[in-house]
Length: 137
Image (tube, one colour):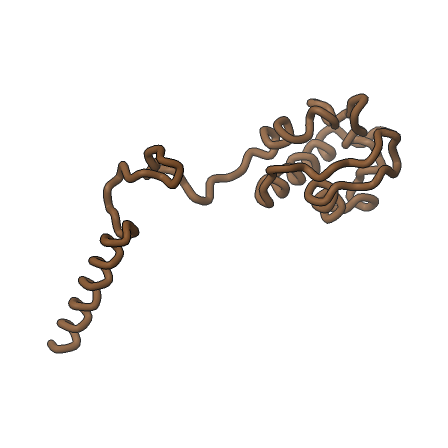
């Protein structure tokens, strides 16, 4: 009985501290950190749409169809097959940039503002498109 009371007391104290600090709010319309209303149905682990991220960050240079532009090379070039440019190479180029090689567009700058999850989603998208469309010589 004494242990149950101690546990109940500790739980009540913890709950009171969380509420006092703003961490224990159970109000479904609590404010997010940016002052907007938080969406209680939003999933923290929502999947990232690699195609949308590619269009946002990559398409301007690498083409909406991955076939390149006058600013960047085609991601369907045989040069970008996984045996020659691994996922690590893609990840590194996106996050750190890449010196000019295999192309004449100049150095690739790092992609600003892209998250690690978005990078992974882009790589999955590009690899799926490479498999679907095939590589060009």
